[in-house]
Length: 126
Image (cartoon, rainbow, N blue to C red):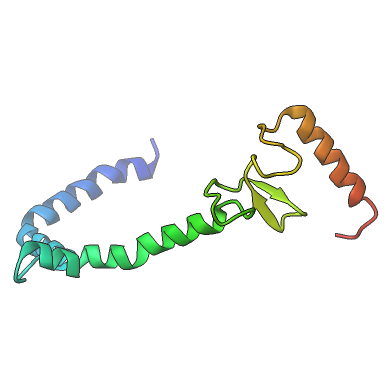
């Protein structure tokens, strides 16, 4: 058995004893970080603390990430743009990609597009 495997049990035991010993302090700090301690109301503290940070950072980041990944054909097409077009400048969904014509890419189409790409870039330096 490796040394790291034998050290796991003592480390877990020490962490459990420390958590049990200092549980009131740990619990209090958790509620302070959550934003629900010594506030006018539980939901006020929650929305001012952890939820406020979530609303102001994670939700807009997810929306911007999704908007950046949608089909570039039209602002009204909300499908994910999984397929590159024009050498990777645009991201299009399968319905708007000129080579796919609304169908899922199959092996023969992928091979043909790969060969065409290699022919176009054969003499060009990378």
